Image (cartoon, rainbow, N blue to C red; front, side):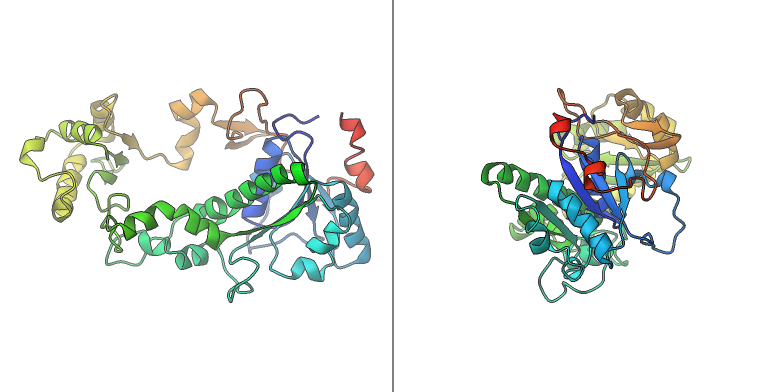
Amino acid sequence: MKRGPLAGLRVIEMEAIGPVPWAGMMLADMGADVVRIDRPHAPSMGMQRDERFQITGRGKRSVLADLKTEHGRNRVLELVEQADVLIEGLRPGVMERLGLGPDDCFAHNQSLVYGRMTGWGQSGPLAHTEGHDINYIAAAGVLGSIGQEGLAPTVPLNLIGDFGGGGMLLLVGVLAALVETRKSGKGQVVDAAMVDGVLALMAPILGQWQAGEWIDRRSSNWLDGGAPFYGTYTTADGHHLAVGAIEPAFYKALIKGLGLQEAELPGQHDRLAWPQMRERFAGIFRSQTLDHWLRVFNGAGACVTQVSSLSALSTHPHLAARGSLQVVHGVLQPAPAPRFSRTPSAIGGPPLARASTEGAADRVWGSRDSEA
């Protein structure tokens, strides 16, 4: 019996890449029984697939179904009859053509929450256009806000569109719909679009821009690397430090640690002086090693942190103390988050092998009575 705040929840995850398996992992970590519907051939992005390192598959089971056949379609619909949630990330209209769209599923289970994850959404002129994370964050104004002015925008990891504005939006939408379903007894469709989620993440920046507090130009603002007190610096031995000294008290501690006198410097928020101040700070940071600066800023309250590489995560003292990373079946992976005081989450097992579960729906999940 799985544990966690979502124990007993039954989720169908249609095999996909990116945000859908990530959202399924989060649900599985929190105790949901997630069954992934695998197609005869795994989706490919031209890279070799090793199931051991497909961390988003952890804690799930899988059922093989050829959705282009009546047998495969019926197998999914049998599972739908006993499921609480279905999540899918196919292009708009594909599930309908397969006979597994919302109306098809609601005919078998009127209380099903049907979560749909796409880049552009289920409607609009770009709904059927191909794309990836970078395209959605480009359209939503995020990509154009990241990087150094005068150069092409910096390409970030796909955390913003795929997972922050995508998988997390799907997760929140599905859980909110479940709360409503518990009251009404009726399911509904959750249309989660990455472009919508990214815009939601941009709400504070959009507000600052309209208030005249944010300049629509890269490297010109307090959170985009323009401010000397919020950015990264290189040390004498080639390491990097992240500085986030926004509040006045933190800024004072930063100035003191750098050996400067605040009274002799331009004001913290004098934007015209920022480029010169950034160069001055950079020169000071480059004059000493990482160890030197870690000693100087240890406990100083200046919001100065070493920039970790992936290979250094397992030895980070704070992450180790919290158990933020776990080794499961020889693979390093993030511990379940968030943490619950009474119904703790757990990693349910290693990433699943394709088609790990055989048989009809009653043999996949059993009866509700058997779970009580």
